[in-house]
Length: 337
Ligand code: NAI
Image (cartoon, rainbow, N blue to C red; front, top):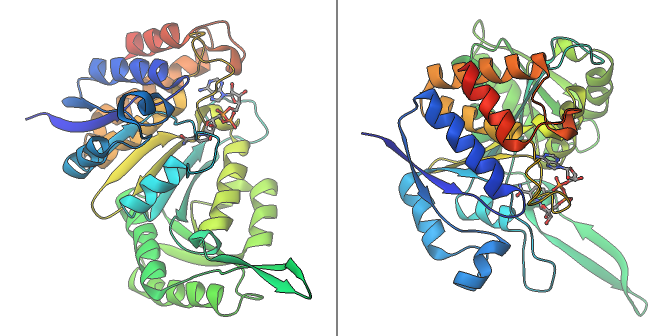
């Protein structure tokens, strides 16, 4: 029986890169049947909403989705669709791996997986202005919401991820020295849980600012990093920068009942329709999806072919310094499979 996966081509460069990725996955032999659904600006005309109910139903049924980038419509009344999807399916874990593919950069051998809490912290949306002396916006407050439930499930995810993927160490990055309650809770639960994994996964904690410096000075010392929402947002872009930027940065949003895999970059309206978008970030996200579906051989073969093609350097798209197209890059990877 093929595995059914919801496929959301999305906006801008989305349809081109998803089509290229679908071709590579099919060539890998992975037994997947795609359930194509609309979302984003491209869905509004047909469905009058950027997130049609039938798309949500499809994700709920299939539990796994591969998603192209979605343009967030500018204007009152539109929330970010990506944030809405995260909330709808309680996708509490954002997994962002970064490893060196192109040699000769600033660092060799970077291989870090950042696991970011995706639903709480300063991004929980509890914000308000405080009016003082006639000025309705004299002050503003954002609440950093941290629950034991939220902290336990993201830390559990990080330790289990390390075990399943043969990773040696989990680093908890925090600011418990200043934010003694919210970050203190995160750190305390982490230290307690680490005892369960003693002898199997090493554990350390680092203050977030020091961790940022160490990442830039000596990224080789990190393996799996886990942190709260905003710290993770910032650090994940930092580690993408260590290995050449967003062009090859994949991400997974994982919850108990669904998982959505996507590239970190957006819909790139400036190059949409030109056929030159780089499909590699979405392809790496698709490889993460195959791992998630236990199609590890196919995922490994795709990664190997991708690395070979990037190292060879002949078919790369303009953002990677080449003169290739979305399709010629996909073709080169298919040839290597
Ligand atoms: P962007 O990531 O779309 O583009 C930034 C720059 O990177 C542009 O110069 C673009 O041409 C280039 N770029 C991005 N992906 C590329 C690729 N695969 N190949 C070659 N070049 C690539 O970010 P921007 O312009 O800030 O956002 C555009 C739209 O995308 C917005 O509506 C934004 O809300 C949405 N967006 C959606 C995301 C998602 O669906 N996960 C994530 C980020 C932004």
